[in-house]
Image (cartoon, rainbow, N blue to C red; front, side, top):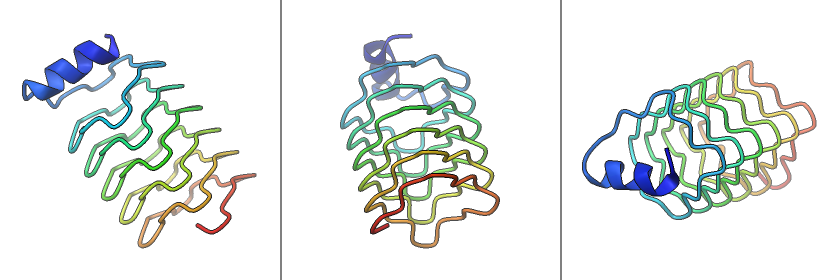
Length: 130
């Protein structure tokens, strides 16, 4: 599915995108509140400044995704693969990142207030000013 097709379906009211393949999709500044993206492939996707409040991204592949400035507050990111993802300046307040793989992720200046990081892998993650 292309990024354009995905956004059209979302705008039409669809919310269930489990296991969708959106690798390298351009979703900059998209309003994706409460989208169900469980187990979706969003690796290398451009999600800068996207609104993903309350979205379900559990077990999603977000390796090397650009989530700079994205609003992921209240998002479900349990067991998500966020290796080398750019989450700088992202709002992750109240997000569930339990058992997420955040190896080498950039979390500089991210808001992690009240985020669940239980058993998350933060090996070599950049947490400056988070």
